[in-house]
Length: 262
Ligand SMILES: NC(=O)c1ccc[n+]([C@@H]2O[C@H](COP(=O)([O-])OP(=O)(O)OC[C@H]3O[C@@H](n4cnc5c(N)ncnc54)[C@H](OP(=O)(O)O)[C@@H]3O)[C@@H](O)[C@H]2O)c1
Image (cartoon, rainbow, N blue to C red; front, top):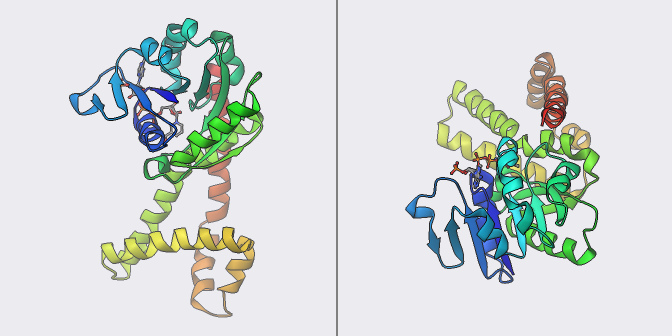
């Protein structure tokens, strides 16, 4: 299978590196407007500025440009996408809008996150009209090269963008804040970082693997008059959970606004 990744920026680059690892993929055509020599060609990777040639040569096309750049890119590739499976990872651009410009393509909208660069993304995807079961098998196989995936109805995409698309930024802020707290009480930064990041992934693994409810886990580690409740009290005073809920809501509304504007 040959794959094109149009727009090898932060997420496109991670996608291209992921799909390249698949034994089913023989070539990855990777496009950018400004191509540096270090990003030209090596092994399966073929760097180019020519979007149309990349699409023509491929069976599956990822679109990973910013939503604002889609205005130029989509019309440019419109008449070479007939019969192609197209996976758009662009935020805020609906299946309907992409289909209006690429009517001959079978389109899947997907929202990965930046953890794709270490093969640990979670990607939600929604198939458009005409996408066949065998296309979805290909989509899942390609998405699996850079993490996990799950199918969702397209109406959920703004919320997904806010939650798992933007999520790494919120988690990074949480980690940074916990490391700062540790510095305040005298822990060296590198030790604090190691403790915090492993606590985060370990807790997430525990919740998922044991199917424990987060509130149950919180109660499990909160002893009367203990250390954890002293910390939780301060989090509640700072409206920690309300802030996070508001952040997800604000980001979802922002995604919907961008979508309407485009
Ligand atoms: N970053 C994330 O975590 C993330 C997660 C999920 C979804 N997304 C979505 O993915 C898209 C890209 O985001 P990003 O953060 O990766 O942005 P980015 O780093 O700015 O990457 C966009 C890339 O698109 C290239 N590009 C623009 N117009 C092009 C054209 N006509 N032909 C070929 N290449 C073109 C740019 O190339 P030049 O640099 O050469 O100009 C740039 O490298 C956005 O729609 C975003 O919503 C991003």
